[in-house]
Length: 144
Image 1: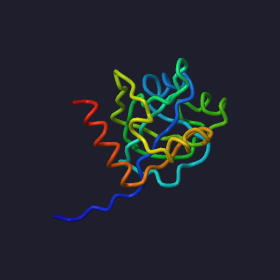
Image 2: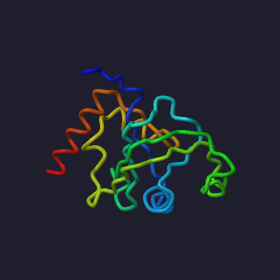
Image 3: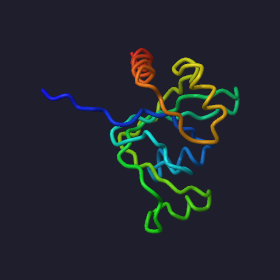
Image 4: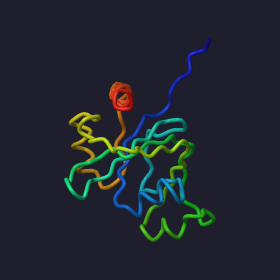
């Protein structure tokens, strides 16, 4: 059996509001952003967090798998939507899963990741391999 090298990192992406949530999970199944996430590659898991209006804390609301990261082009179906928000990259997704019960991000991610999420405007925070493994394990326990 050959060893397959994993390229890229799993990421945490912020969803800024309900309209953006609908766009990602229900309408376009793509995530638009300004600037390319440097370590994101095909097959990497992306976790989505959204700030709760009630508590002001970040909640893990779903996940998906990166299929492709590319520059936005005028022929994309979401081009008008993306340019209205000044986004120039699109992350194509598959296997999108919206969590029926959102999970407090502080129960899943490390303190440094949470700090970066709070200051990063908006978009992605890459996870170390160790943290990505830990997140997968924690999520298994929530689903059990």
